[in-house]
Image (cartoon, rainbow, N blue to C red):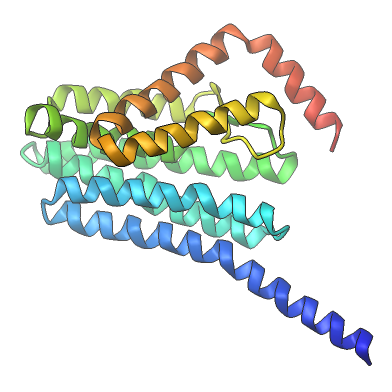
Length: 254
């Protein structure tokens, strides 16, 4: 009797643990939805911060699932749906209202559709690769990183120039990010605790960046995320053979 009671208690605890990562994913989805509303209302800085908030919750949900030992197919699919809203749809609408709404409606819609198209393809490819063998890296620029570049560019421009920034730069960034999302450029994942000295160093850098963001906010986010994008591009091109070997080793351990 006590045995079955313990089993029931463990089952209930597992259900509660399953819910926690999904709550963070839900918050990601909610903030992305709010970013769409605020962008449509012309509150571009607020929309940019909402996208950044969504990215923060997105970074935590998967880590919590692994920490509690409750990763699931449902969690992965829910996360992709939330990412499609927060990091594909929200940036597309933000770009449309911030930079393109004075163009012909069809032209503006087609241009602003680019991050949504590239991000959707990127997420679909990621889900397929997870079905086969989870990789230790991202193939193509992650959609949250691309969304952070666009949103933080707006915040940085307001801090430096007190406006949205040069539309030509914003559109160029958007096209470049779209190409990186659908590319096969390798980008490192946020390291887990206990994965070696390099992982710990990366985590320390991330923590320092987070602390700096609290104090300098707009001046830190944009340079920091651009550094991640450029570093991944350079690292992938200069260390391709080493990365391929690492992937083969990791696949051989599954």
